Image (cartoon, rainbow, N blue to C red):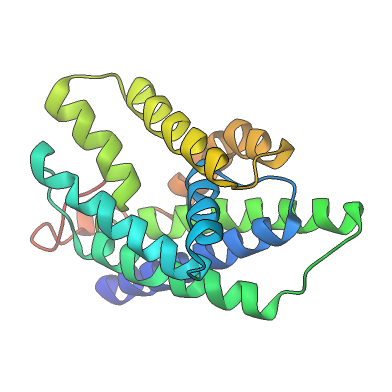
Length: 205
């Protein structure tokens, strides 16, 4: 029963995460740093946004090798599911032109991503590739978590912006608000550690 809940949380959380990204993209007031990179590469290559998201996730996973970070089931699912769900969202959501609807759609996307993060991290089935890169660098090289995260996200943001990704007020809003929001959703949706199946994966930190 507990495993069923964990798998359900993982799958629903990853789908909602991708859909939340699509909402923020349709808001067109700026997107999170990693999605700025995905947008930039998509614009330069002509590849679909969702496919680029998958490719970046797989590439980041390869960076786990030198830092000796081990993936869990949730890590692999993250790479496989978020891209298609984001692409699905872009397919069903209309392009918006008026500013107020765009702001509202972005805000909804931010809320959905916060909820989705609580679901998939709360499932305790392994960190996403980007989170695992941050924690892996922290463990391997002793960097503080905030330094590792800031360095990674600023780097991908700059590269994505140079490539043409959408940097705007939404990017800043995400950076400022996502931390406090997931600080609520993760504890709320966390599967109790006492009923975790330790042989399946490593818990994200």
